[in-house]
Image 1 (cartoon, rainbow, N blue to C red):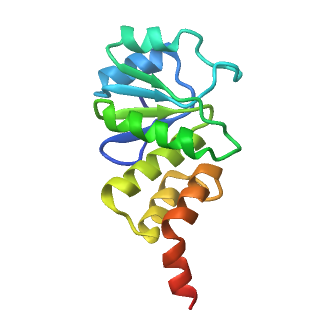
Image 2 (image 1 turned 180 degrees about the horizontal axis):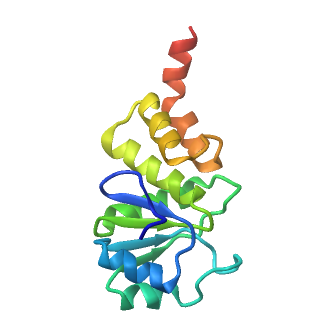
Image 3 (image 1 turned 120 degrees about the vertical axis):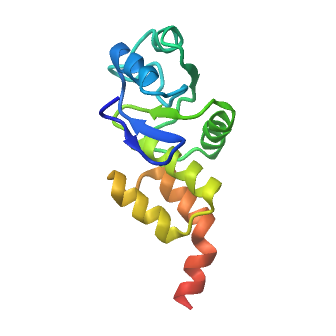
Length: 150
C-alpha cells in the first residue's frame, strides 16, 4: 500500500483504506489491520472487516476518539497489536491516531528515549501534540523531563 508510512518493521500507518488498498496491503505482506475508527465517523468502509478478511488479513477494531486521550482504549489498542500477526497496518481517518498508537507501541517495545520518539514522529510527519501521544509522553517521559529541568 503506497500511502502507508512505515513506523517500524512491525507497524505502518495510513488514513482510511479502500477495499483495493486492503488487497494491496495483503499482497505487499501485511498480515493484519487495526482500525481505530468508530463506525459513525464519515467516509468509513462499512464492510471493512469482511473486506480485510477476504483479502486474507487478520482484523481488529478499537474505536479511539480522535480528540480525547482515553487510556483504557489506548491500552486495548496496544493489546490488540500484541496479539495480531505482524506486520500490521494501523489506520484511522487521516493517520494521526494510527501514527500515535504505532509510535507508542514501538517506543514501548524498543524502549525508545524521548529523542528517538521525537525523531520518528518528525520522520513520519506526526505532531507530538496529538492527544494520545501527548498523554503517553507525559506519563512515560515526565520523570526524564523533570530531571532535565533541574
